[in-house]
Image (cartoon, rainbow, N blue to C red; front, side):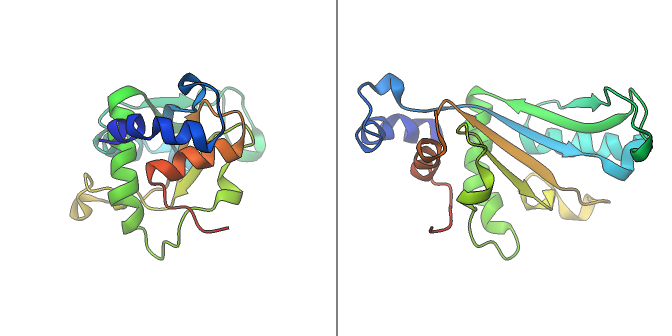
Length: 178
């Protein structure tokens, strides 16, 4: 549904961004959903629960990320589990973004809109954080033992933040007014 909306918006985005070709219009290349396990790093059962919940939310098996170096200050050794992530592309990516925009974000408590000033990285990618994963409809709240947050990074082919923001606004992302 979001993919077809993007295809319909291509000519409008081309003129709005003053581009010479439709091929130059920015597009979303991938979405990375990341969960840092933090204090749960030693609890194998909790990590399994996070993996299963993330699999339900995204529809794709996540990858467990390991520490590359030992850091004594964080009491972390090389090879310890530090997070769980999923990289979505294609149809799954658009389905996930559709659910994020229309179902999950409106269910966030005290949601006022996404901050355009904080989320962009300068190269056209947007990152947002959710403090509770239970805002997704796939998660049954009664079965949840621990609530965890997740970070969602949307990678685009935009060259700069204003182009990426125009693209995401056109797709229906609820940004705050500047």
